[in-house]
Length: 181
Image 1 (cartoon, rainbow, N blue to C red):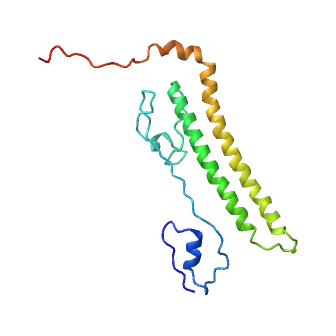
Image 2 (cartoon, rainbow, N blue to C red):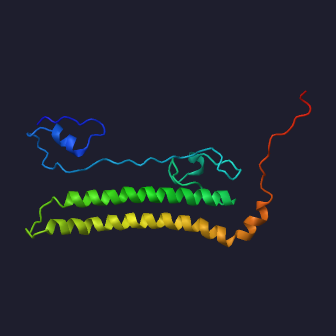
Image 3 (cartoon, rainbow, N blue to C red):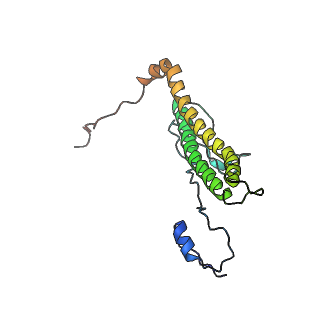
């Protein structure tokens, strides 16, 4: 019952070769580990000209780390930042959940059907994994709707945005400093 640990990043085939035949592990399926990396900005400039509160002070009751920025919509940049962050999270999570659904379906398909029906184990696995696939689709829809929210904001408030656009800082070229001679 000696099992060697595969090196970091080993594929399923490499991991299978590294286990001995006397292993008590009866399941040698493909089950990679996935992680979710989330960049959380705290105390940085949100792009709208205001300082963002730290994640611990602003997120009381929501945990120590916030995945989404605070829903304070004081400027168009705040709306854009919130919608873009939600869109990016939704797309990333939808890929992760869809992959989890496929892995779950493949794993459950290896469990024999108790009644011995042909393809019964695959049908049961598909029924269970379908719910996780629906969750992945819902996350994808959330990402699409977040992007559409900012598009609708730009369309509905085009007049107000254009009214203040001319007051935005114009790019300044190099200035001649006549005092430095």
